[in-house]
Length: 85
Image (cartoon, rainbow, N blue to C red):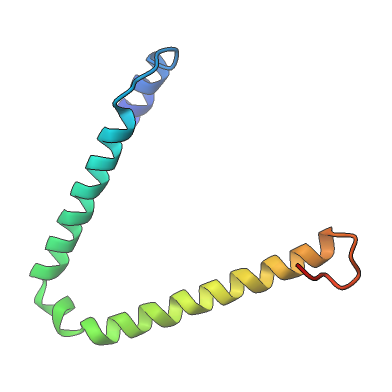
């Protein structure tokens, strides 16, 4: 990471055209390798249903909390006395 920061700092005045393609390709490779690692792990595969349920509950709770916090913040920062979107 440090090497990337230094390289970016040194080349900050130049336009690197292929940068987005390289980043996107590396992200896809990392996601593939992560999926491969999960698929090869017997413990994860056996508990996949329960892990998926837990992940869905956590995601739903996080989304609900974010929406609630945004609504409260919106109500505090707008001039509307109702706080409606």
